[in-house]
Amino acid sequence: MLEEKQKTVRYDRTPMREQKPEVRAKNFDEVPIGYSPEEAVREAKRCLQCKKPLCVEGCPVNVKIPQFIKLIAEEKFAEAARVLKETNALPAICGRVCPQEEQCEIRCILGKKGKPVAVGNLERFAADYERNNDLIVIPEKKPANGKKVAVVGSGPAGLTCAGELVKEGFGVTIFEALHEAGGVLVYGIPEFRLPKAIVAQEISWLEQLGVKIERNFIVGKTATIDDLFNEEGFDAVFVGSGAGLPSFLKIKGENLIGVYSANEYLTRSNLMRSFRVDSETPIMKGKNVVTVGGGNVAMDAARTALRLGAENSMIVYRRSEEEMPARRAEIHHAREEGIDFHLLCNPVGILGGEDGRVTAIRCVKMELGEPDASGRRRPIEVKDSEFNLECDVVIIAIGNTPNPLIPSTSQDIRLSKWGTIVTGENDARTSKKYVYAGGDIVTGAATVILAMGAGKLAARNMMNDLLGQK
Image (tube, rainbow, N blue to C red):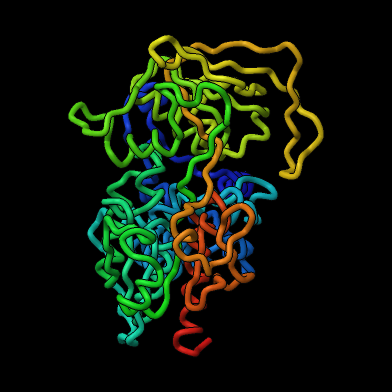
């Protein structure tokens, strides 16, 4: 009987407490409440401490997963956070927004008979414990080596690259176009998924390490990459400017009042705090809001609309839920909060009144055919199935393309046919000497952790090239 109970404890994952759906749908507070120390220890003790940890192989930044989890099991919480930071400059962020279920956790041996260890929840706990108890320690750096690196963009790729380099004795300056550092972490991800105070703390830690951040500095306008080399004296440049150019549907009515790209809508809410009464950057809150798309950004936009006061917040997606690229947890949270899903529907036009404002979105029903190049079943229109959804705000969340500003002002940087910067395989080097790139500007819109992995790769190769070491 005791053995059966131990197996149950081993195979059953410790759930994380959350705000109730009916409460959180009306506020911007974080949805998961986080583990207590007792819950964290209980979950950490599930880890088998494998001799060959497959979970680490699945992590783009090679976090020492068994080691930090073992420390949590031993109630050495601050020490666990420090082990995390040896390889991950942003653990409190990754613990919240990294898709662990597709990377480290999917490789956990426990997942074969039960549920995998909650690596992300434990990462979040350790980082939060260190921060909340004022136990953050600035590690020793190597002596200054005289080399200066410019990092373009303060998103996850740029922050990670900067953190890796500054610890190795490089002088690092980040150039950020906006008035706040953090990139997509501050303008793209809502407060209820990633509190901005946590992003600010992680960035503050990097600044204390010695990273300089120049805000309101647009590389490509304020100065070009050549200017950074020739006038500012940088030895290398990392481009992590992201994929901030929104894509649209190219249908009639997209220029009507009340139509937003998800990028603009979320930036107004997240960065400009447009939900405040005194906001200088207002937003149309809308009673009936339709978000087009099926990814995490679409879920963020639809859930933000609800919190801004929408009576009905709807998702329109041309495939079924099974094909949605959003994380399962985000879809689950959206459903719990009352988001209305219109699946197998595709917009064909946006309708407006004489005043130029949105009144409805016209859709056609779809059915799924054979898989396309993405591996998902291709949506096919159902004949004579058009219908209207009444709405006063439409948010287009069908993806972003790379920021074109830097490539357009540095024409010796080679681009792909999609406008992404071409880099060498597994080295982050561009066609321009001593210019490296990573994150969404190279891959197109992807995840935070993949961008961090790219920043880390670039830093490693910069060290090799600038110092002549491996």
